[in-house]
Length: 82
Image 1 (cartoon, rainbow, N blue to C red):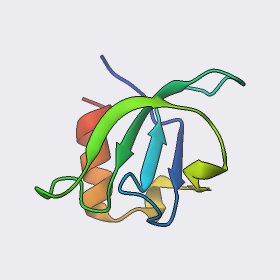
Image 2 (image 1 turned 90 degrees about the horizontal axis):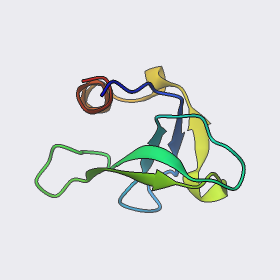
Image 3 (image 1 turned 90 degrees about the vertical axis):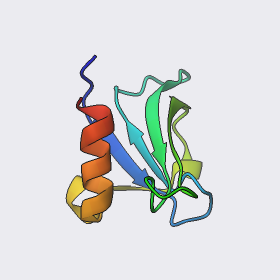
Image 4 (image 1 turned 45 degrees about the vertical axis):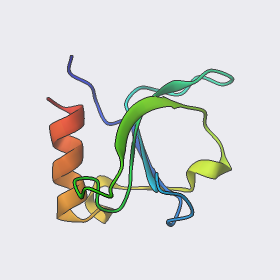
């Protein structure tokens, strides 16, 4: 299934799942599909997992795709747009 990148959030490294990539629009009070990533998702100690997210301040600040490092961008493209 092909997904899209709807919004990207960065919590500044407060948790292992630093980045949250929403793959569908958020509807108030409902969860949406998301990919959560660590700073190095392909490292054996890294993190990359699909799940559900609720919108809120815990996601961090919204960022642009271009704000991410190339390794994160490539990982997102492999996982989300496959």
